[in-house]
Amino acid sequence: MVAYFTEIFNGLLSLFIGMGITFKEFFKPTVTVAYPYETLTMCARYRGHIELVPDEEGNPKCVVCGLCEKACPSDCISLAGEKPEGGKKKELTKYNLDFTRCSLCGSCVESCSFGAIDFSKEYNLASTRKEDFIFNLLQRLEEKKK
Ligand code: SF4
Ligand code: SF4
Image 1 (cartoon, rainbow, N blue to C red):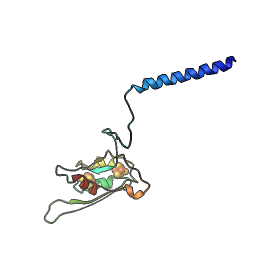
Image 2: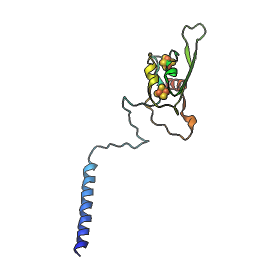
Image 3: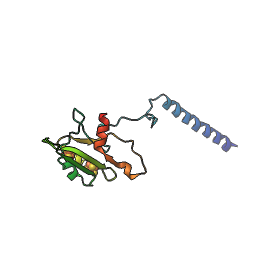
Image 4: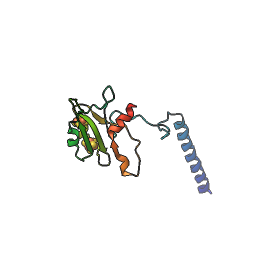
């Protein structure tokens, strides 16, 4: 009989302790977000896949030196450029990133002395298809310009 009432007492005690914690937490500020309806702003140090940095006109800052491509230990970057007729400088015509191979090491960003690439804040990436992680960064930059 004593064991029976002890069990009931312990059960009620743990229930009230639990409800007390719930009640206390209820009035604290919310720390979770209702993803995907709400999203977080990533911190400055966050490393998403790399992206091209635009100049004031929205064109790539890249001078097609190829240093980032050479610096990448995983062969993720493939770029190309050509001199337009009558132009003095090469213009970027292709900048592809194979994000399936990228380790986010940062060698490419560090090697660029023109500030032409940086880490994006992109974290909404999910797919079962490998092809969805091959990014045409030049196209992405042009789409942002619109
Ligand atoms: S290192 Fe910078 S400027 Fe050179 S190709 Fe890469 S992104 Fe362009
Ligand atoms: S972060 Fe590293 S692995 Fe990824 S593209 Fe740049 S150099 Fe290559």
